[in-house]
Amino acid sequence: MDKGILIIEDETIIALDIARKIRHYGYSVSGIAADESEALSLAAKDPPALALVDIKLKNASDGIEAARKLTEQFSIPIVFITAYSDNRVRERAMQLQPEGFLLKPINRTEFETTIKSVMTR
Amino acid sequence: MPADEDEIGKIKELLKNEPRGLSIRQITDQLPANRNLVAKYLDMLLVSGQVEMRTVGMAKMYYLSHRVPISAMMDASSDLIVVLDENLRIIRVNDNFLAFSGSAREQIVGKQIDQDTLPLLAASTSLATARSAIKGKEITEDIVFNRSGAALHFHAKFIPTVFENGAPGLTVILEDTTDIWRAEQTLRAALREKEILLGDINQRINNNLQLVLSFIDLQMASLANGPAKDILRETQNRILALSLVYGQIGVAHPGSRVSLSTYLGNLVKALSASYEIPPEDITMTMENPGLTMDESRATTAGLILNELTSFLLLTASDRKGRKEITIMISGDPSKECVFRISLKGHQLPANLDLRTTEVLGLQLGYTLVTKQLGGTLSISEDRQGFMVILPPE
Image (tube, rainbow over all chains, first blue to last red):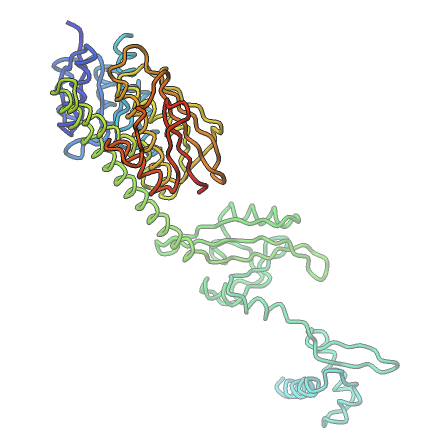
């Protein structure tokens, strides 16, 4: 079975909406995590093909730090989805060389293109 | 010599009352002192720079010097001032410097700069700067001096100086900028705090907009195609039109100018995704790609574009084949701005009246154009769409 996509997002409704879109594109969702520890635990159990990572997570958890650990421990490609538009956050995230950096509210076309381009590689 | 000082004081008093000057004889006539003594006192005053002399015919006229002694100048300054010779020996310091260093003048004058005499200038970098400046080039540098655990900040000017005998020297003027530095630090911290706060507000707004859009998305997914789904889509697109402006400028910079090509370009992409129309079927042409609008006007323009485009796509929803939307924007901020929005091959109903229409999207579009922006909205001559004319900003 193909690897799925891990959604790391602390807003349940947004996570469900993203999950629905992913399934609509024909991919599976390997899990939804609300913070870093949950994300690492889910990735260890079922390594995903891609992680969609929000930057501000539950329990004051930092999405960029979570993404760094996912990359180091599991070599998982990362796409950030964030409501932060300021340059300092973007620069910090870009140091991890993510596959994408998408701003909320999500542009559907951009979202679909980014997901498909990573998953078809 | 108190007696001499007394006589000198009397001579200075006489000269003060006679700005055109007095000869030795005129002074001798008014003082109980002989000519030789008066001449000697005048020589002393001449040498110390307190008195000047000019020759008028055969007579030498003495008057009080208009020059201000350098020591008086130095002591009047609020800065710390030190004069050094070419070997960096201290020649003169002002009272402020002495007060700062806590030394007596006689303890440091004539001595080399070191940690004991002038610790403020004893750092190797400052000594190197002083040696460079003596060669003839004025140098400024900021010095941080730690005293009793507190960092003191100085702005130092190293000014090449030539003494009366022609020997090179150096005057160092140190301005205590500690209070300015602290005020700047406080201001920077306040600005950082403001940026963080605004960034956080921006993040919350965008996140909440996403949350609302996700709610609508999930609701739409549970509905079959039909009027209810169309209403939700229209609502979602209105929210998107607003959120795209914030995505471009954020709330951190209210009053910012918004690039219409970026904002409306993104809006058009969002509309094509929302109505599942191939992106190439909605084309936007801008006569002036650099056109900008103020944030509030741009938001309204985006909502208008959204309503009119949505109306065209919804009224043509039953039509088979491609639905090609063309949006043309012309104008500049100082002139009127014109939007032409049309659907190729489409004909608006002959009885459509924009002022009395019952269609919510058109009512909103008409009100936003006419009431909010003071423009006009009309049906285009070919009836394939609309023309919006917005007045100059």
